[in-house]
Amino acid sequence: MPCFQYNTNPHAFLRKVARSRRSVLLLDYDGTLAPFSKERDHAHPYPGVCELVTEIIETCRTRVAFITGRPAHELLDLIHISPAPEIWGTHGLERLRSDGDYKVRDIDPVTREALDKGDQWLDGLGLEYLVEKKPGTLALHWRGLSPDTIHDIRGNVLLGWLPIADRAGLTIEDFDGGVELRSPLGNKADVVRMLLNQMQSDAPVAFLGDDVADERVYEAMQDRGLRVLVRPHWRETAADLWLRPPEQLIEFLQDWLEACRSPRKGSSHIAFTLAAGEKYLHRGI
Ligand SMILES: [Mg+2]
Image (cartoon, rainbow, N blue to C red; front, side, top):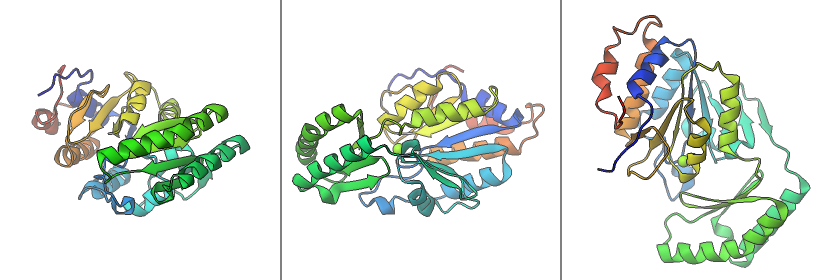
């Protein structure tokens, strides 16, 4: 068992959710609410997750927002949550509100041209079959390939992408299952900072993520909420809490729901906080 250093007491956090007029639940999708799948269209949520999130949206005083690298409408098709949640897609380059209002950031000509060049480079390498084109980004997916093949592909891709990104001011970021060339405007941490600024400073906020790229979100939150790492295996992280999916993820969402259903004043009768506490892997209580 690795050594953990957690800064936030999840019991106290859920008690705060129980007492607060408004809370915020920010959710990554792939790897967090859904197991990875070689076929990206088949990356369905863990059983029970959508039902719980739906109930949280319907009955809790909680703003639920998905923040994902996927295109917003693609995620909407996968989650089947009604009423539809707020979705920040393509790392925040898209915003899809629950009422269907959709906005996408303008992509400047320099970025568009650089992405075209990045795409042509992949075409030249014969990798078009691995490419996903999104607004302002180009993602190369290699899940399911052998480690040696991935190593070779990554090296060849970066050989062309690095100078392209350098000239146009784009970013290159590894993610779990591939690498991405994208506009620097696409940044999940910026989305979280903006959402935090919109909320009352004392509103409890939690972000659930999994990827190394989500570490930037954890860092952006600092001590402004509960930072949760959801993944089957431990890795070094700035998160406050580690949940192994799907069981501990489901329990966390159930506890959130239970907390929301509790009367706002007084917490002595919130039995779940005592019963639920020991199942979370944490330190510092
Ligand atoms: Mg993820």
